[in-house]
Length: 99
Image (cartoon, rainbow, N blue to C red; front, side, top):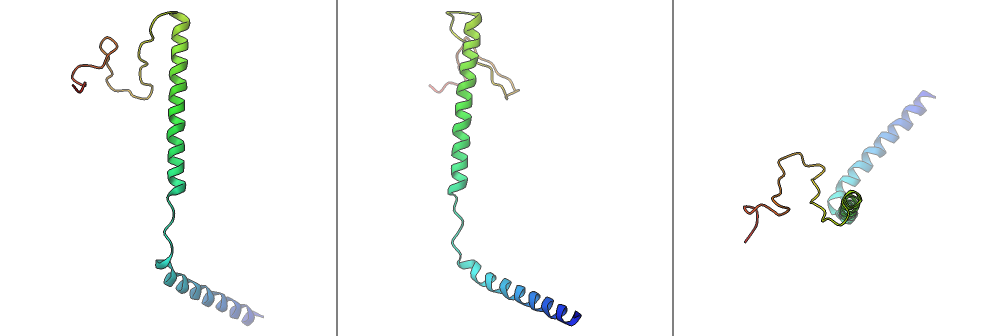
């Protein structure tokens, strides 16, 4: 009984080794993996964030118009940027403009 188990185990190990050798020989000739799924995910994530930003800005405008009807809405302060942020009279500072 034990010799049969050892023989089966030896056959399993040998065929496993044989398969590894075979796939190692074939591997360099395989077709490279496609980037299409990754690019599709990145494009979907980009457009999802664009739609989210548009919705956030529209909600900001509507909230401002509720309390200040008829006025122009000031620029929305960035949500996830904690650094220095300054707008002069609702316009971009002159040292940033490309003229």
